Image 1: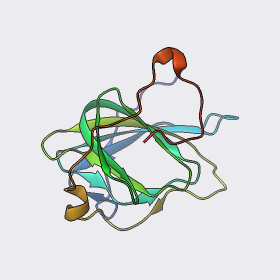
Image 2: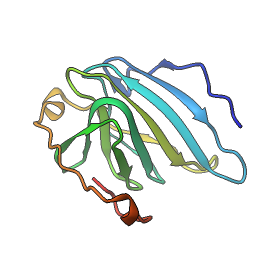
Image 3: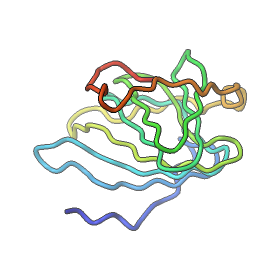
Image 4: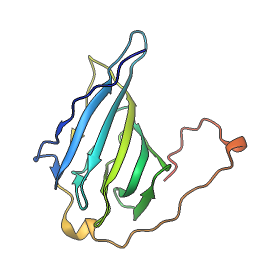
Length: 151
């Protein structure tokens, strides 16, 4: 058992717009390379464009948020939704304009490899694009591991 961290810190303003708090939950336990973080975004807050070398899974705990992969539409996400980010895929995520969102982020890490690559801030115009609420819905009995992004 690993006790939950009681600490969060303000997200760095050079990588986030608006007010967000982040915290590390679990760091690699050998031989696993799994790492988890939690984040809370105030209404309108969001990350800058970024990508992960090994991909990432985001799970929405509560609230309503937005995500977008480069070249795709903005999607609205809600509590219980899971977003699969493919390795190397440029994307951003954050809260909807009038609601908070909290999520857990899980990814593989490599202490000797590259980390998150950060890009430009998400513009107000990009953020304000009308979101789509469509998602791939799979019955639980049909869920199988896949390398394909689900959004």
